[in-house]
Image (cartoon, rainbow, N blue to C red; front, side, top):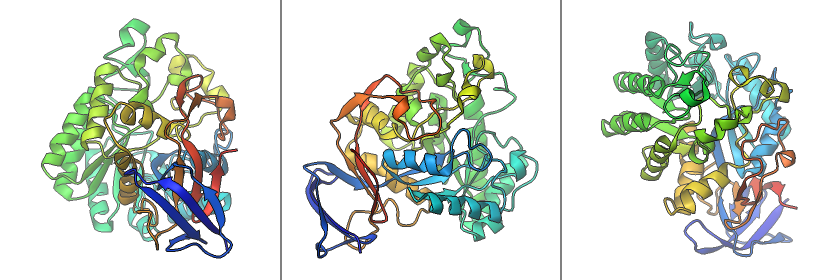
Length: 420
């Protein structure tokens, strides 16, 4: 038996709280011989849940493994992550989905929920066996990294989502408007940098199409990494109509802006790209007012060689799990736009609800799973990419003075990370 008494913590609403853990659940009173953990006023929150993580394994282990990626998750306060399907081979069958979940069990750092691909091989031509994967426990389907451009196929996917009570998560990028050469925000920096622009309309038009398909079919739609003011407006319009749509924003699109691209540092190359001040303000406002439902990290590790190329040819993506909460604290909490109960909502409760992550995002009460994170909201430090648990080093926050909040993470009654 493992047992802990966490004494002197504060809940998200600021109220003092003591928690008692026995094995993998919270209980009413301390168990005999429970280890005492003095929280000393730290916040205690439900473990964070990331609906959008790239763990790279199988096939891209030089960038990340399930073990290294979930170690990042634990350091970031996460107890559950959803592993995107763009691995090699693609997660487009029940057998491959079960393999991802098993890799997560072996790593034993956080619960790993496999995301199934919408289409076979991410090619966008034939639907994956969505019903069969749903029967095997997959709740979220995405071709993330590629947009499903075929409207009829997207309709079929959403119809299947309605039948199987699953979610279709779209990477909203019209590849005819933002093609393979598009690499920076067209509105704010493309002209000055002399690079091919990624226009806002390439995102919002796909979202507009998809929310109407969602309304038509009743299938639940999730919008990955929303980045523009126009996209926020479309989602707000769809929600006013009662469309079953949710949307996420990434930590980096909340905190970082396209001015960071002036030196063409490929660490800051991401898809969709970093945007300008007007878009960032719309994202922050949309998260604060509930138009944007959650924060999803889009944790996207890359080996050094993939980032060493010239900017247009370098791989897009950046690390996100370890500094996700820091970004939200800096942009939303410290500015007064959100309180800690809001943070729990967008980083734990609602992501768990969207992904049907049983046992996660639950209130910290007796009888609930012991999935939690201890947070020091006032600690700050300089981010050092060399201290990351990731196998990669493409950390856009390197050298920044940011909140450093995670004191300890507990998953299923076991500490997966403790600050030393």
